[in-house]
Image 1 (cartoon, rainbow, N blue to C red):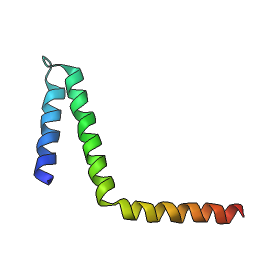
Image 2 (tube, rainbow, N blue to C red; image 1 turned 30 degrees about the vertical axis):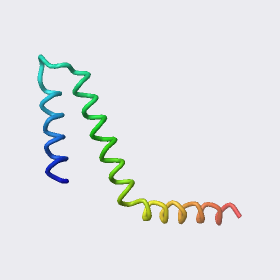
Image 3 (cartoon, rainbow, N blue to C red; image 1 turned 180 degrees about the horizontal axis):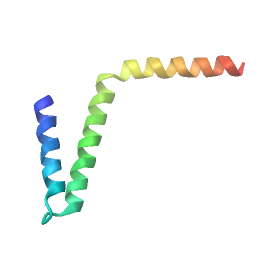
Image 4 (cartoon, helix red, strand yellow; image 1 turned 60 degrees about the horizontal axis):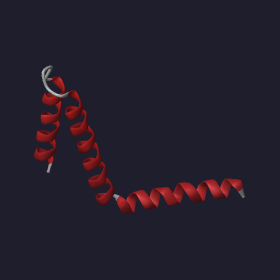
Length: 65
């Protein structure tokens, strides 16, 4: 998985740095990589994120009374 991400980022970097290439395609690749990484992160750490969020909400509601 790490090698796949590294290759995807390298491809995005070369697409962005290519002066004769389509700049919009490069930015779309970057956005796609960010979305995929975010989706993987959310899938892997969904339980932890929910626990942290519930803790934050309970502290705020406790402060507000």
